[in-house]
Image (cartoon, rainbow over all chains, first blue to last red; front, side, top):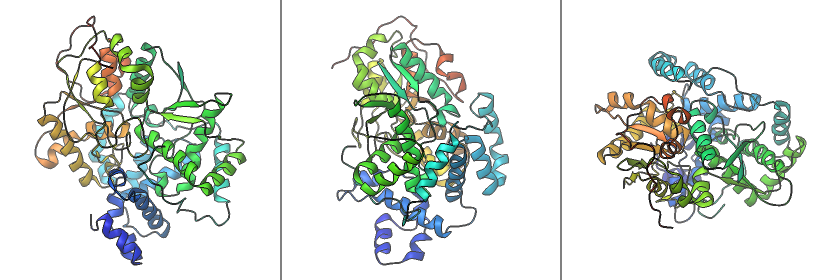
Length: 160
Length: 306
């Protein structure tokens, strides 16, 4: 982690856009919400990290072949189209686009999982793909929508 | 007592043992789970890193479908066993409740697809249902093979109790510990129950996104559980289970200390205590399953203080 969350917030407020979006920290954030629930001021740090990831992906400011944004994009492309995630297919496309050599290294593990019925290449899909596509397009069609910045922060510690 | 059931993609893939054991256990306890017809991916955490509003739309389609299953004004309980799906569905509800502009966008989008969501769905985790609806006394009564002496590391992970769940404490959750006690098992006392496993760093099924960071987190959890003499680590999250089970060898190579530990779903342990056959619990699917010898089927459950 090159910058701590507190530092990232201060840098964001100071307008240091390139440094913030280019930082490694926003990708190391696993989205576990530990900080959000611990913060006494109820600052939604995790959701802020997501917002920074979205901005970095939109502006293409992240290291090439870096796994996390590639995974996010591939995942979205697949579930937009099919409605469900086909885990093994997603994994293979991520290997090929980031570290093809790891595919060989991890093949024995994949084979053990396959033998136990935990890994299948079958394409998972919903029936009403057209309906889902219509719903997602309707979101895209909302005027003045900041397409990747979403709906603002939320406090984490009160009841759902 | 019947619930609508949202399996999510992992329970139909690498975590099919979670689905098998969950369905077997609930059937044994006389609780029905009716799979939501034509459910779609919840959007997981990855979608929110690309487009948050569309991520909400993905989740909201499922909420609308769940509502369709029950006529009338009452609440609809939707059981989501995957901790990731569970959090994602709760997060969507939270944003719909708190942010009018998000709610308007999602309402319009659902309408375009011929759907409607009125906010009647209650997203529930099976652990919540077991403890609060079925009740631990009834679970203990159904135990036919008490798990005396089995030392269990209860691992809740990140998203089961954080940040939106209300059925347990966010910092020191206890429901899983109490469930294990009701089965006669011995939950170990350890401080890492909600510490992140790094699953999203290891990228879930197989691929490393930031693998070095992920391996270290796995190592910390497994070493601590072993240091405290746990026989098994149980989880309620497909990603945690996969991550903690499948990368043990790699962690051993990386840090020079082998970390071998059985990592299962809490429903598998529950199923064993209910006397169910291992095959119905998907135990043959696990990469490693080594437990101390359990008592034969036919004993009684533990006494539960309400």
